[in-house]
Image (tube, rainbow, N blue to C red; front, side, top):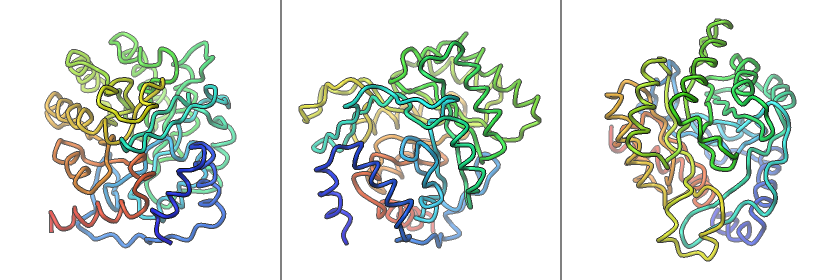
Amino acid sequence: MNYQIINSFINKLDPELAHSLAIQFLKNFYIPLFPSKDDEILKTTVLGKEFLNPIGLAAGFDKNAEVYDKMLALGFGFAEVGTITPKPQEGNLKPRVFRLMEDEAIINRLGFPNQGLAKIKSRIETKKAEGILGINIGPNKDSTSRIDDYVECFKNFHNLCSYICINISSPNTENLRNFHEQENLKKLLSEILSIKKTLNSKTPIVLKISPDINDDDIDMICKNILEFNLDGLVLTNTSVKLRENLINKQKNEKGGLSGSPIKDISNLIIKKFFKSTKGKVPIIGVGGIHSAEDAIEKLDAGADLVQIYTGFIYEGPALIKAINKKIIERYA
């Protein structure tokens, strides 16, 4: 059945219900539509790992690490699960996800709902990934020490994945973005890298950044990344801005905006970080990829890999194949 027909039905449902049904379908009934038979030209080595192709599933889709194996089988070159917090939490009050169909966008204010470290760790331990798995970590909403939460997650997951992503950029956990400030960022990176050294861990660490930052923030973050020899960046998360030109009546809902409207700002942030780090820090580009051309723009801006989420929701699995085909045509 054509994905657009299925999607037209899904779009009549509450967004969170639709997402839950999609996860259950993938867990219990899914047969891969596009088994991974990637061309050699798509292979790339980033973070010291070989990726079969540069197209990844962004964090947020598989919050509880339930279907990352199915997503890898679908054709993704890597999958990032989470955001995972030490304790289970429900997240923010519903409704908290809004489809802006006319704008090819989504606004969410989920607030890291997840089943917690212990349950998700057990699941990953019993379902080893046959491919590149990233784990996105964050603090609990009611945490008394957010840095301790990041450290606890790193300790539990570093040996179960290909890389750890430190999420300091969600707009839906109050004051989380304060970690973009110099002293807070230095303290966080110092603690994370200290526990990494203590554990003798070789797992790469990447930092996920907000698109709602200025040039001074970029220069400061780059300085710290280079000083701490961080392994990479994820650019960018959702935006609390960029509402002026949206069409949908829900455009002013509180939360983070994803999808087509953030493509240009994401690309600009990638270019600026690439320039500021002189291309020395691997970049995973995410934000507004709804076509193969959009993905190529991210790569041209300086990204080594890209991730999709909202575009995947709107365009379906064919988007992965289309992007890879475009890359092969371009570089063959």
